[in-house]
Image (cartoon, rainbow, N blue to C red; front, side):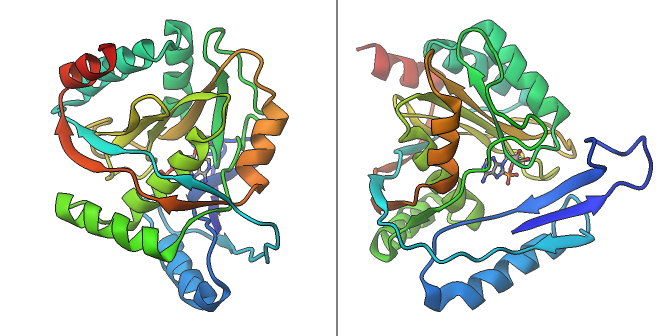
Amino acid sequence: MRASKKSRSAEKTRNSSGETHISGAEGLFNSSDIQKIAKNFIERALHHERGTPDTIVITIESIQESQRKISSLPLSTLRCHFPSESKHFIQKILRFLGISARAIQAADRIIQHGNMRGASILHEKTARRLEHNKMRGVRVSRFGIHKTAGKKLGMQLSRLGIHTDTVTEALILASKVASCSGVVAELCVSDDPHYTTGYIASEKLGYLRIPKIKRKGSRAGGRVFFVKDGTDASSLAHYLERVPVLITHIAPCRKTVTIDEIQDRHNK
Ligand code: AMP
């Protein structure tokens, strides 16, 4: 699903297509669930905090290829109280994962600018942008979760008090992204002005939720995938956009962790 709004004035136009991105959603579902899911996506588009769209596009495709089966990333939540603290932690964690200061700054600029439908792909050292369409970015699609795994995940998230569509979908998406060999880490900040929990996801540290990643009311937001030298951006985009991936195994979901606990655990 893709929902957008035509910008009324040149000043409000955030990209050269004259459109403001309102909301998007995708997934892999059983055909028997299509009507329910489509209704849910339309509701989401119509009641998004970013405004009321004037266009909603829903595409439904039948997928015949077999799905690659993967595990979800282990989830935890970083103890973090203010946006200034989260900024400091994000830099620390991304540096710990080997990402250059230059690439971290570039990611921050992309997220502050916002209004992309998809994600940017950044070289982890040089900060070069590798996605072909820099206005749209790469839109991860064709990711889903097996019914049994979905129930297990739901139970774990409920115990932590975070069983929402937002957390579930973001974890599934991030697990697909982290399953690409070239991807070192993903940084995500929601563009919903009222949703202030973002995340850093990586094969090494798992899916780390970061509360207070931005101040309430901010319209900044976006996703950045940091990739290793030599990653072929076209093959990566093909995998992310076209290859069906299904979560069939659930890694543990833990409660709050401190920045020191993360570093201690991984320095051993
Ligand atoms: P959201 O978490 O839905 O608030 O999205 C935050 C930002 O992530 C959006 O503004 C997009 O730039 C990006 N994004 C959302 N969905 C996807 C997706 N499926 N694939 C890649 N990037 C996405």
